[in-house]
Amino acid sequence: VPPGECFGLLGVNGAGKTTTMRMITGDTEVTNGDILVGGASVQANRDAARRRLGYCPQFDALPDKLTVRETLSLYARI
Image (cartoon, rainbow, N blue to C red; front, side, top):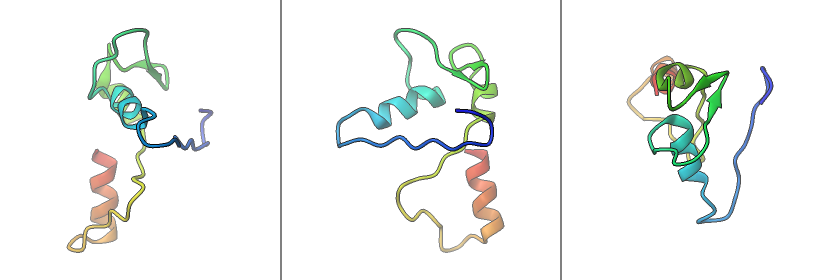
């Protein structure tokens, strides 16, 4: 995805969206090939790859007890 662009991962239930995201974030082992995020290998340098990722859930995930700033800070750390 080019810098400044956004990417949406869409598909029917069971298509592998969650598994793909888990591999991109390093939460699930990649069994074949490599995933690069901003040039950083998820397998070799997961922290560097994660620093280059953003995440937006499909559901309304705004906690009632957090301010907007706290919510943005929370998701920035995820």
